[in-house]
Image (cartoon, rainbow, N blue to C red):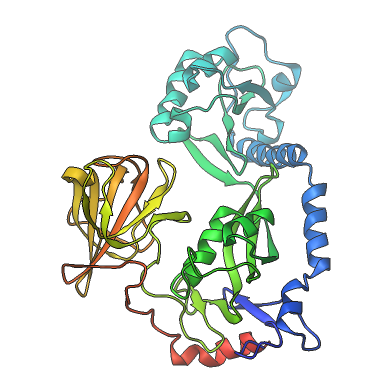
Length: 455
């Protein structure tokens, strides 16, 4: 049961309004609960990961896609097949009556993309006739993946036996998707097939020694999950100063694995943080397909309508202060904002929804974006390497939207983001400003939330 008492850890958390059982049984103390890892689930997940033959899975999945493409071609191709210019038709083709779709035989030709290749060039290499090359090459205007072929990626071409006509093709776009195309009368149809991804739930407990980031990464938690964890609790604690050795965390999240064996993190389903003896617990809950949010066991919303940090994860290199020695100008001057040190190109995100009031070069601030969030609140982002093309004065942005990238433009000694916050035109400390809270869970959902919370 989720409540403020430190005894039992939650018995149920929810994802997309479906309960997911975590632990059951007798009440145990909080410290014990944090380390009571569900070994059965972990072992099953590890066994599944280690036993997966990624290359075999990739081949099997693509063979299935190719077989389906063949069936569609042979089922729809009722035209007599023309004879190739340079070879006689095979006996089977001679004996097959015109329009007998089941008798159409397809020859597979495989090619790997080499440097400088185009679809037209590969088709000529395969031996497709000039008219067909022209017709199929025109499809690159409609399908960007064919216009930008990737080195080493593979094609499978399907040619009716005894012809130099192309009936269909398969192009492996990525480990997760493949493009299939075929003739459909005089047209060419295309569809991107998404290869299956395995989604597993992973639970990680940890003790913080120096930082949450180092503790979580040692246990294999992806950066995206750490960032989401920080976003959930960012308004409750300052991750740059409030954590101490011995504090603990627990996170339950989706781990996605593609057919090549590559993994990445998905949504955080639930999280817990214990700092200095105080415990916070967050549960994901979605009401009416609203995208979902994180709530306390009592149904209060976590956080604010704004993100605490404009970068996904990083360290704060220079705290808010009224005067700081400027490393370039050589003078003391107000430093009204926070510097986030991060590698060049790190995505910068809008901390809240709003309207862009400035996007461009602004003196010592370099490439600069300023956003009006309404109610007198504005935010600014300086020294950007680049500004996203869709971010222009007058356009609207959403919370978390990428608006640019960390750079060193203007008066900057190295890559970093200078982030500032204003209320009614006056600077306020971004790390301590009181911003509007997110609304609580609507009362009509509290009973359902309670059922899920209590199991």
